[in-house]
Amino acid sequence: MFNNYFKPGVCKRAQLLRPACLTPQSAAYSSQLRRKIETTVDQQTKAALKHDQFIETTTHGLSWATENRRSVITTVASLLAVILIAVGGGVLYSHRSEQASTAFGAAMAAYQTPLAQPGQAVPPGVKTFPSVLERAKAANAQFLAVASQYGLTPDGKLSLYFAGLTYIEAGQNGAAEDTLKKVASGWDKDLAALAKLSLAQLYRQTGRDQQAIELYNQLDAKPTSTVPPGLAKLQLAELYESEGKTAEAKKIYAALKDKDAKGTIGKLAEQKLNPAPAGSAGAAQVQ
Image (cartoon, helix red, strand yellow):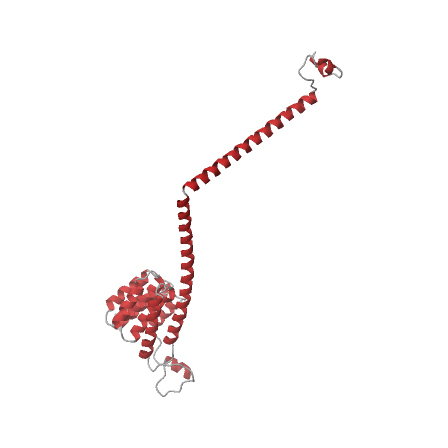
């Protein structure tokens, strides 16, 4: 019976019996339309909720900022101050590093100034010193000035090391030891290793071999780029050799030769084990 409702012409008569006149096509369209309406309403509802949440969050934020205005201003000002200090500190450090580099270069130039005996012909404009002692004193004063004024920079720390070396050349062993110990206790392990190696040499020169041996062993246990593996041991073997402890020295030389056969340390150790006969170089030239 219900099939008659969908026949042409029957729809009008059935309007009094049914709430609406629907065909299969119109029923499908109505279902799609309903879904679209529901979707649109749902989207509008979500948008309205988001908008309300945004307004609520913004209002809350503004309210909090208003209530805590002084605290916000103080916090922002503090952050800006920290940033300005960091940037300013970096610029200042860079500027002082450049100044330290220039001053260190001048001190090194003095340290490398050639020597000339009184009356010796020297090219015009060339600065010279009459002795190692005089040159060491002049360079030492400059290195100390750089270390004092720019002590926190790399060149300032390096200047302190060279101040120790020039103290040794000037014969001021006590000042040299104190200065090199300061460098040796620094955080820069490469520079500290150099200072320890120079200290060991100073101890050897002043008859304190046992202290030199301790430093050589320390350096050998923790090699660095400035005091590479084997260098401290080579120095230690030379110390033993100077003390007449030939067996101990040869044992170290042999170990270094085997460990670094093709390297510089190994070749030096081999030369120590097999020294060239005296006069062999001259004989070879005659032939």
